[in-house]
Length: 90
Image (cartoon, rainbow, N blue to C red):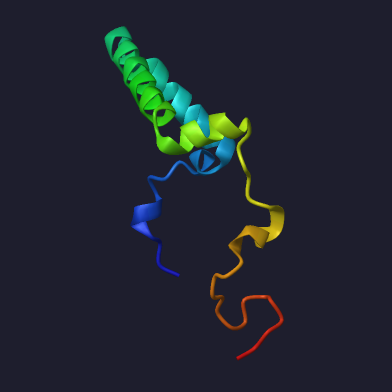
């Protein structure tokens, strides 16, 4: 079997959730302080924008966020393809 040259440079330890998180932390730690402060300020601006959306106002008015039911029950009315595990065939 021929060797795939594209995969030789891949660090497979980064392809896990834990490896991905480590890489994110490593990259964040490598940023200069000015970039870190700028990023935090930008995240605050985005957070403020989300807080001002009509959906956020409605959630505050009801006092709780509605979550989708488990097992995809919140997807009623969505057309599913045959053989998708629902037991129905067309």
